[in-house]
Length: 414
Ligand SMILES: N[C@@H](CCC(=O)N[C@@H](CS)C(=O)NCC(=O)O)C(=O)O
Image 1 (cartoon, rainbow, N blue to C red):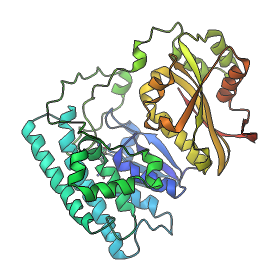
Image 2: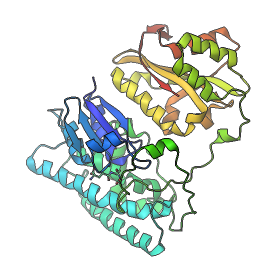
Image 3: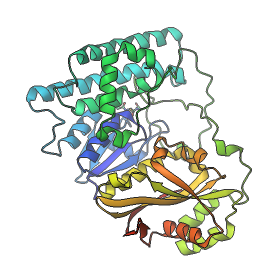
Image 4: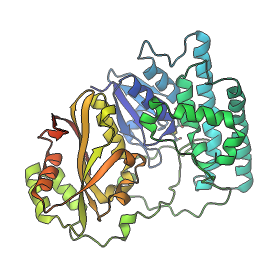
């Protein structure tokens, strides 16, 4: 049973450290998607009346909002944790830096990048001021790290994990090669902390930019998409405050490569409906009767680093994270992936049907797609059809390198 629910949305920087320490402490958190960008659910407002994320609700009913408090609560579940320091002074210093990143760093970065993305009104001078303010805030960290490896004490602490997540938008949009040369201490610290497995396990690989990905120019006028009736039914959380991180206006999305494909004879949504509503054997019969290899292709997916997998629920969360990051391709993919085996002896395998003949336009929307190997299947081969049936039915074990692994847990992407 999960220790509790974490209400957040994909990529939310205020939730990264919470998820990292939960994973490191073997604490299962059920991730519940609440996204202030599109309006949070009515029920969520009873957990956090401001409709902000993250929030935590424990299996024992304990409710907590405010990311710093949640991060400390989850970290302190491990009595032996070193992430909260040794002394009272360590602990207070950790809190100081967490507060600094939450109240100074992320809001000032937000005021810098949000106008450039059309999230709040653009004004060149205001962006210059926001940039100056953000750099002043970061300079304090730069000076501190000139004589200190980490933010608090000689070892990595929660402050470092939390700070790295909160400053990551700066590295994503502005802190290019030239900036990094000017701020070597923050850069060294960020790279060190980011590359710790405790962090990369939830955040994926570190990518530095060569040039800023956002420049101080007016953003292209953004068309606000008409509201879907479903979204309209959800109460919108109050408007995002100026220093907040989350957007109020949709950013235009690049056209998905699959959009240029010819209309399929049978839409993938029809298959998703069959799979959701019918018994799986009946749905599979429908699938094979209607599968058109000119519109679609089938893929076996294998995780490349099975020897690093530990607890089954953590592996299941890993698959869940991958699926969340595939969101931009949801219209073009259906499939299942499962954990087979037991703790510290498991593998991930899955089967997917996708639009088109090339796996990458569909899967490379997830930054961690390189952790998986994609092998094209041939629907005319009985063994490949059988593999797909088994992956979508979750009844049979798999054999990998001559060893049989029983099915343990699975997730459906539909
Ligand atoms: N004081 C809160 C702030 C949380 C917050 O502002 N979260 C942002 C996302 S990072 C949000 O939910 N913004 C939406 C809004 O302000 O309505 C905390 O430290 O957890």
